[in-house]
Length: 143
Image 1 (cartoon, rainbow, N blue to C red):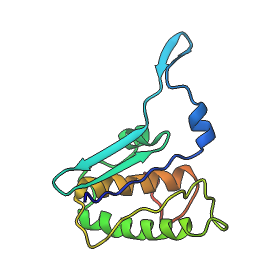
Image 2 (image 1 turned 90 degrees about the vertical axis):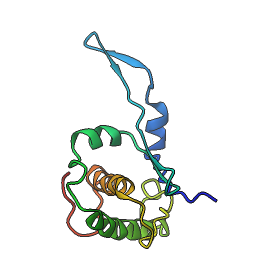
Image 3 (image 1 turned 135 degrees about the horizontal axis):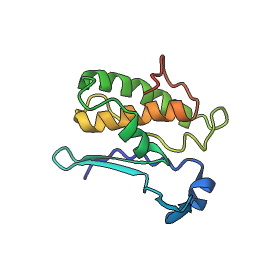
């Protein structure tokens, strides 16, 4: 059976569903809304990350530090902290906004997911914390 990490974060569902997916004229210049789904699949390792959140792909391209800026061990350590707190909040919908913390993230720190999977998860966690004014663990870099 293929093991997968799925992060389906459809935040602000009502807004996302009502957002037009076609070109919109602004100042007579067409603007196309980019499909904000980021997918990384590693067939060799049989894991994948799917992130759906308005604005994340733009943030990743423009604000995230470049690949190989952090070591894989650094990313794994931070991801373990962030995902642990994330899953803690998912299990407490009466305390934390269930619209932000919709589902658990299946992240096992004993598995080597590879650099790219860890890079995406880490950057999503930074994006999420900065965008939604959340603090999962310790200092949150602005990028």
